[in-house]
Image: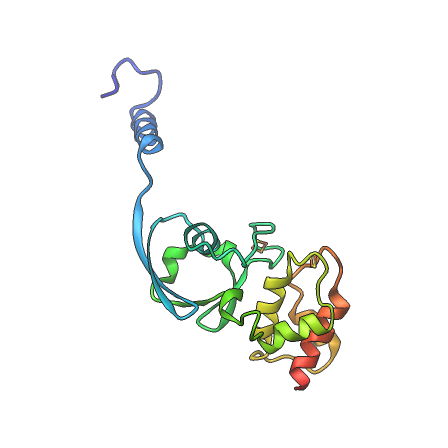
Length: 181
Ligand code: FES
Ligand code: FES
């Protein structure tokens, strides 16, 4: 118990200081979270601060979803939540209790690629591949979004997905190919 009478700081600050030092040494609070990931129910026990991205990569070992900026600026971490694209680095896993999450692993497999994956292969829609999972997840989500027919419309709709290799022309070609089909 702090000695309030002889402490140089006001009582309120001492109490706050004491609370924080206790919190710093305490183990993180864990919460149960159930997610349906790629069609399978997953029960996790997570630090409340765990992002959806870290839950997928670090806890479920689904490393197809990439961490680029970790600040919502690059789109490498794009997944689908209940069918809509989301930056998984900006979203807390605990906020998705009961939600349906789809990652690149749930889209297709090497023996049976999703049409968008196939189109990326056919149009060389990648170079290093680091942004590619996010690009494909965004491209698939875009198919169900209002988007004009022009390449410029696709570029605008995909503007949240950055490609450091500059494969933009081929990415747009791949998405337009799937849209035409
Ligand atoms: Fe999420 Fe860059 S890692 S937007
Ligand atoms: Fe390298 Fe896009 S293919 S960052």
